[in-house]
Length: 450
Image 1: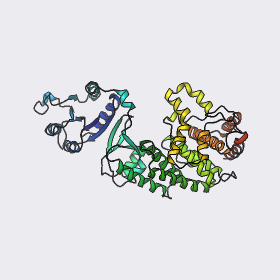
Image 2 (image 1 turned 135 degrees about the vertical axis):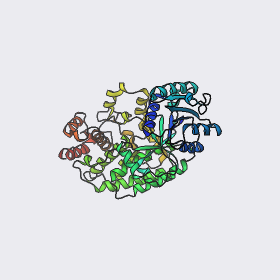
Image 3 (image 1 turned 60 degrees about the horizontal axis):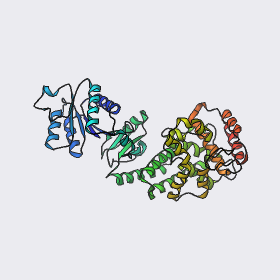
Image 4 (image 1 turned 180 degrees about the vertical axis):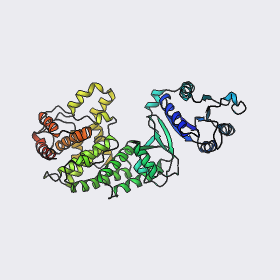
């Protein structure tokens, strides 16, 4: 449902937005205006299902908006939200012309009653709505900052089903916007899917290339931004040649930077690990693999490229952050009763599903496929999907498994990380034996000295 909120008091707009978010049981996209004349211009450009409008405003009042809706024969249902009641101005707000009335300051009660009326009249099926494919594409705010003008409207996500328009087509996402959203810990805004998709992909791809080539920006920040955006777009749009090319270029650029860096001491404290979890684990995991490249004789640039590729795509078939945070199969069995049936199936099937995705990308090798397939195996043969033991798991997969568990541990505990404890637990689970032994000893030496 598309809703336009009109009020010259931005605080009132925020209150109405909050109650819509909490009371409405349907997917909503919200736009706002602080004047009647401005609202009319928005109504000329697009159709809204609902307009919640104040009366007293300095540049065009609520009755002006209602008259325009009637004259233009818009489908928009008009809701008066004002200290003025319809009976106070019967010539302006005829009861058969307005859908509902909310009397200020009792906005919460009014929105609650409105939500019940909407649910009845629109026959809302919340389960059907929640199961439909998302109508919005996530775009990182740092990418928006690199785009000169928006090719479409941009929205803020209020919840999984509710979106608030915060930037209009043709406007520029400036430095003040960037600072505002970073301050609020918002790292993604959303573009609607539809007629603007081709233009959107074009400008996003251009911004991604700028990030890849920005040598002044730290490599970990570039890794975060590229991974977050590319994997989101791959899931939504599929594997276009442009996105796959950007992923390849990013991985190659990352490997070249990582191969130069052998400073292990407190490296995780120097990383920028803000943003979404899949990208944070990619950065931490890849960085640990890179640090090992100068300590293990067989870990050269070519091999590191395979490891970083596996890091980039290891979680692409997973939807749940809780599932991504599981360290190994033993941890999964401990948490299994807290997971939904869908999450359990997703976890157990995702290595094979990831292989299917990699085959479509046409950038993987047999080594990358083996790493992805063996990422949840355990030294004692308790893992999955093939129940391999520490002699059967390849040395490359063993390195990937150990560095991945360390990365998750670092993200979980940060400054409170106790590496004596974690390596003791690794030894207890036999991660120091067979094909794990060399990687375990090098990692233990590096981390217990740091």
